[in-house]
Amino acid sequence: MGGPRSPGFDRKRREPDAQRQPMKSLTTILLRTLHDRSNRRNFIILLRFCVALLLMVALYSVVFHFLMLREDQEYSWVTGIYWTLTVMSTLGFGDITFHTDIGRLFSLLVLLSGVVFLLVLLPFTFIEFFYAPWMESRAAARVSNRVPAGTKDHVVLTRHGPITAALIERLESFGYPYVVILSDFDEALAVHDQGIHVMLGDIDDPETYLRANIDEAALVATTLDEILNTSAVFAVREVNKRVPVLATARRTSAEENLQVAGCTRVLQLHNMMGQAFARRTRGADATSHEIGRLEGVLIAEANAADTHLVDKTLAKTTPRDLGGVTIVGVWERGTFELGGPDTKIGPNSVLVLAGSKQQLANFDYRCQEARSQKEVPTAQVLIVGGGRVGKATASALAKRGISYRIIEKNRDLVGVDESYLYGDGSDPKVLERAGIQDATTIIVTTRNDDTNVYVTIYCRRVRPDVQIIGRATVERKVAALRRAGCDFVYSYASMGANTLFNLLKRTDILMMAEGLDVFKVKVRGSLAGKTIAESSIRRDTGCSIVAIDIGEEGLQVNPAAETVLQDGQEIVLLGMIESERRFLEAYGPG
Image (tube, rainbow, N blue to C red; front, side, top):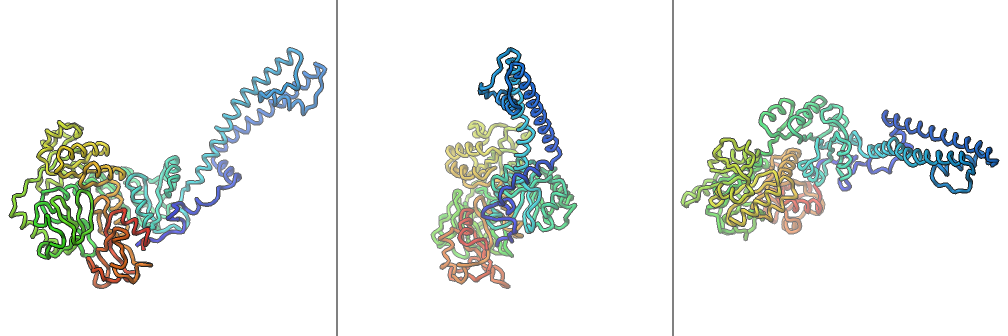
């Protein structure tokens, strides 16, 4: 289901066509260097220095000629120039010497001036006023201030950070062209050298977006702070009223300002993460929580704890047990397993469900009915970190009637709220005072990934049975948090990137969890004409077909293994990010 590729981009090599051309000739680079006013001024200074140096050599050669005549030595004018340069450059071959004191004093003058002018001033002047500007011009030639001609259906980004880096990886996998606008030349050059498509420009300048061919863009995504995002949205809307513009915001007031400025959609990732944490909390309820939809088919998650499904395999469940929904897969201690007959549901399992709204309601009723017959322990949540994510998590838990306690070491954030405990969440004594022994779930939300890993290790060692949910700021820390003992991990980067990418694809599929994704592709090539069983998609890639678009009848959820895949037919797959990559490498984006 890849987007159209523009002629100026090569997805595999990740470099614009113009940047793959041979290095421009010295003449072209020199002309580009002299085009800049400050460079022209530097070149004039260097030229004046060279003229002064030539005049000095000429003067010394003349004086040499007359002093030699006084000593009854006669040499040609060429020899005078030769002697002057050998002495000034400190080579001093000694084949021509003075015999009088005045001649030797003159030799010392030439030698000392040569050291200053040739060995000190000339290299410094050359580097400062010519070589450095020339190198800067060569570097500038590698970073353009506009997108390649013909670029269309591309994504325009205003920053290269954790979220956009993760988004770029997704865009390249599906063949979507993109460009990152950066105003700082050094940053742009460094990012370009990483193989990222960049262009120079100010994000608050409408002219920048015209050079980015905004009229043909598919999406603009700005992930800076609220003030800069507002400026970027205003600049875009000055030249284009149609293109979708997405922005991130941390405050509700900023969200309203961005909407007034013309933003199509504002994402508050801390609220999204807080809701995800609350949804995964163990012992709260067994109600399903919608996380996405595909044309009427809902995808949801539900905690299996304290329900009638615990200790059963999927083969042993009945339609009545499930209320008509299908269990697509099961999360167990941070690992996702596609649903199969032998898949066992444990007390810590989180179920991924697919079905209609009514079927999910039936599932909820059946689970609540089973839970009402048991003595279910009250959920007690300990939140380590009371920043934006911690507060959003607490708010989501409060709406569900779940009690919580927050540990925060920034006294300004603690205030007089009784639910807060002032202290360092990595201190065992603080964790004990906060009630680590009574907690059913511990949510680690600090902005420091290393702190989160440390706290997770300690909590898992002290409470092997407790549910731990962690937050990662950068993607590379996700695996470390899982190894430390987190049952589930969410990262800002992946959540933001997946949300932006799904909005680009015009779907309502949200990120189901860190590392798990649902994506839609068209059947092409070797897949066409095969049954699902014959395709071996699940065995070869780890992805599972959860639905097939069968035309006017809509989506067929969980199709049978003997269903034949038709050429051009859209299929919906579910799998880990690694599985998705393997599928795209094997079959392409479609």
